[in-house]
Length: 187
Image (cartoon, rainbow, N blue to C red; front, side, top):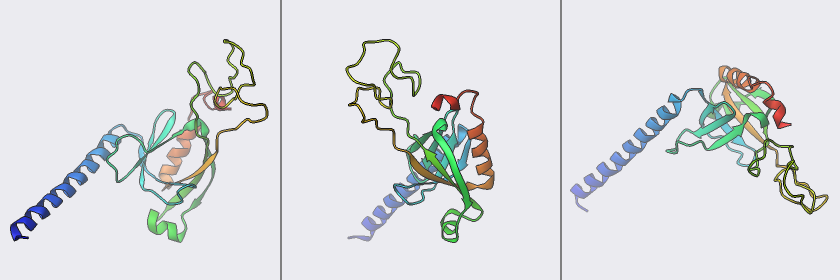
């Protein structure tokens, strides 16, 4: 290979790296422009590893975005009504090396929201008041018929959020600041 070809390839590689970095910065600014974001690491019991990212507070959901991604849409969304704080603890020595000093880890229980048939108002409103009766009992989780004795509730999963003390205070205020009656609709 000639020196000119190697130099051209190196310049192309550098341009790609710089363009990707610029896209990540622009993406972060677009997400931050909407407001209500904090630095937050996420770990689910399924994956077992920490992922750095941004938590974005929406009116009824917590959206979580990975830090090093080009995707503008959230990588995870948690419905406020189904998030329950199980406890918190300071980050251990090993975790603090990855997450940073003065980090608090919050363990939350999350019940994923399953899609309900159109026209349903909220969980627990089955069977619908109108419409033809079904041949079997209604499944309160999916709205479909099910064999007797085989109800299957949605899986409850545990997630951990790692954040600063100030971000934890904001998170707890956001959880408790739900509109009146909002949380009672979930039960």
